[in-house]
Length: 141
Image (cartoon, rainbow, N blue to C red; front, side, top):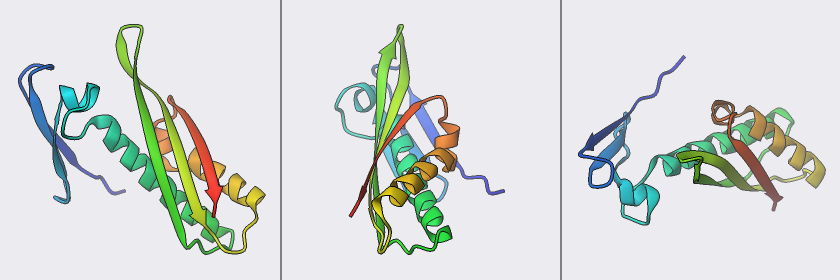
């Protein structure tokens, strides 16, 4: 099976330090810091990257399930909101809210909801994050 690589480099202590994250493909590199993670500073953060991975994985999983059921989606657009909260003194990813919109000709609402739920439960990133509360709002366009 394929292995994908990403790298992170950090200099300094937690509050005053900073770092960079990059993808092995070379298509993305960004700075990150305490401010970009816990406040509103410039740069990315691990939770934002997890959200991007989850949204992308879910969208592909839903497209695959729809195709297996005989439907050809025109577009699936997914947003992931990842919550990072302090729980008993430790920062914890407490939940991920997936919100997807799908343009799928000839499918009814009930089946779309069922297939979207199946995609949420079976996409590899959802499985990797199984210890996190993941919710889904699916809208058929």
